[in-house]
Length: 186
Image 1 (cartoon, rainbow, N blue to C red):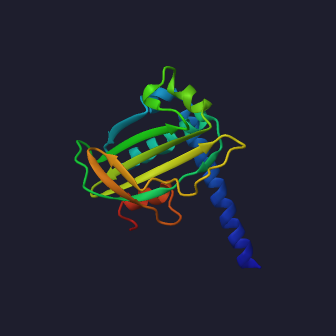
Image 2: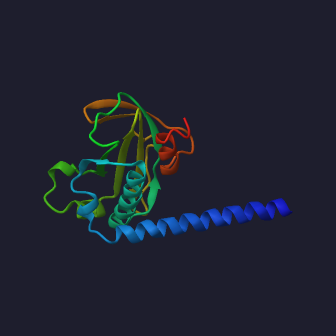
Image 3: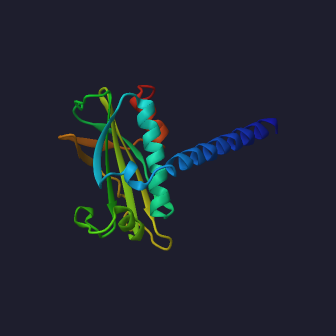
């Protein structure tokens, strides 16, 4: 019985910490408009530290979710296999977005409006540090819609002039992706 109470307490504290962290990033995201985090449908950035990249990914993800105003449907993180990215700062980040049935390269109205109006919207971050790379994706879907393909995670990415193969370890999200980049897990 004591063990069960301890497990419930740990799960409860973890849930509270997660909600507090989510609120923190939502509050940070509200400080800037959409274009601050997403200057275009795809872009690259560099960071001096992994912590800076981690903060950006979490805050930008919160901003994306606030903007598209759809519940999250799925999303995973992957280990990327491919060449090392050359960069001027230690961390390189690439980002791209997609919207259902819309070519974001050919839109004639604000990107955030197109993403909000689409039935589905997705965002993918590719983060590289030393000889490691990860992809972190999030998919958002209007209520009442379902994905017809259970295998919609990308298997390959092109970034920074290179090709990468994605491997999706079970249970990976943003935290595990950054743990992998730090060399804490393989």
